[in-house]
Image (cartoon, rainbow, N blue to C red; front, side):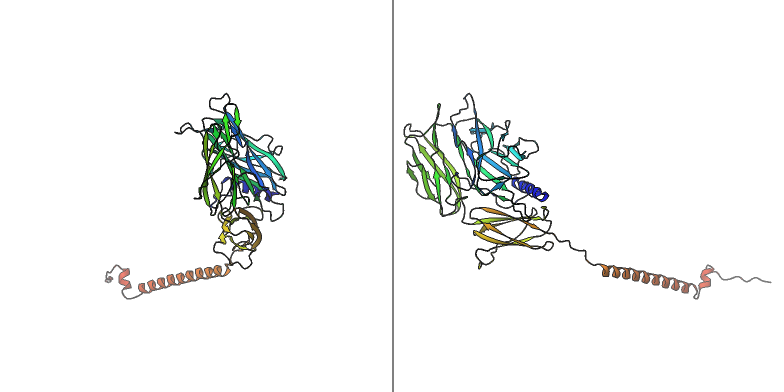
Length: 463
């Protein structure tokens, strides 16, 4: 149990960026919730019509979760980004400002009744819960961040439409603000066995929009092979949530037209269908833009966001701990080999050494089952297997036994030192005795009497 608690605590600290971490961010791609895998998403998908001059100038957004069958969690770490944020010193007026004074509302959330521990609670770089922190890589503004964990029995899927938390925003200007789940870490603590391996649950995320302009354009997207959009696959891009904002409330568009620019050099696509399929042939970050017009009013709006397209490769983060769950204070070399391809040669980037935090990350791996071999001069060798998925960085925890290295036998050196000291002492004694002997001999030689009488001749008395 002690090992389990320590492992969970270390994992949460790693989530928050407390430890130096040089590997890639383990962040799921942002896209709509159309997949059977787990998901973290924002509701309502669209909110509108509130102006800075309205009687009530606040809008509330919720972060929700779906957990698939077979998955368990005992913690989450969520960062929600919002665009067009408002600040008093900004030259271009923003639209929304997160209300740090009201903080987070997580009453009756998925961990209700389990005394959740909030390890991170940050709104625009302001800590809003005692004993919580802002992560070292949290944004100064335009981001809210909440991480919670529970002790004891984890929650089991399937769970649908589960509330995580909500945040209140003040409406400060005219325009739109996009809500994107930038981090969606759901922690599966693993089993209670000796080789427990906590994992981030594979998940997709869903975005949302606030707008108070006559037409509000918006789209979300989903991958062909979740959790990420992969090079060569077809992405579904859906702008059907675009709407018209009126003083009386949200109104659906009438005879809308959509014009798409996919940002990859392919021809623009224009039509009345809000849903398009597009294939990005190469990896990269593509800025996709849409122009939406309403046929009844002639009003238009444009909207753009980045769609990351990943290579058809995956990553593996190996986390090494002692059998007690602590950090290994030793050199550990990790080698990975694609077991799915028995004849595959060992690649140049498939061997690495853990860093001070006990981790090493391997990138650009072909999907499949991998053998992990871990060795070091002061640890017992270990091995295990782990799956690598395209478009995802999988975690694999390995627990190692540190060896007690006996001190070297210094008996021979001690004897040599004693003999050497004794020999030096004996030589010194002999030299002192010889020096004294020579001195006595000089004192008894010719002229010794003259020296002893001060060089004067002796006197003889007369009788």
